[in-house]
Image (spheres, rainbow, N blue to C red):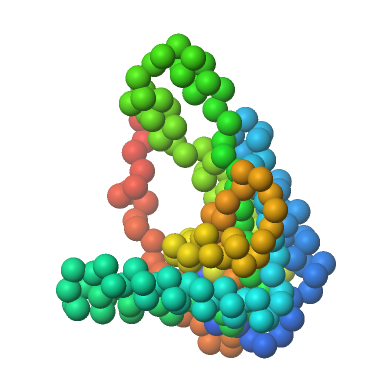
Length: 212
């Protein structure tokens, strides 16, 4: 499979067979991830690979409890019901044989240091920080991981929803990496025999402008 085919073939997989993921394949995906571009080549990512079933289940329970707590803030029962319907999407990783936790450290912006020293207004600094370079780097690394997994025959699901329980998950995993924080999760496994179709994309003409 070439890269273009992999991009068009890849889709989010939310159901997995009860089969192991080969460690050498996880490593291949991680090697692909760290080949991603990153702003100022800071490579601000860190990965924690969880294969222990009990730990994956504990993470899912943490996310479920957090989701329930957030649901209590809904302004009425209708809004609460709407929010709670997404519970299964936030905890689907519980059935995956592998969950990769993606951490990031803050992007070091040289310009910010200079501007703060010069007493520049905070709104100017916030404008410079708006591109969220740290998150962009993580997204590029994750996409490389997903494409490599597709090439190797695995299904993945890139998840940011569970991070509403970020603090609790970080405490459970107890990875001591100063300045790093959890950004996203990747569920990984052998796809079930029947999976949902890939959702249609917005037509290209709606999201592209050519200036010639």
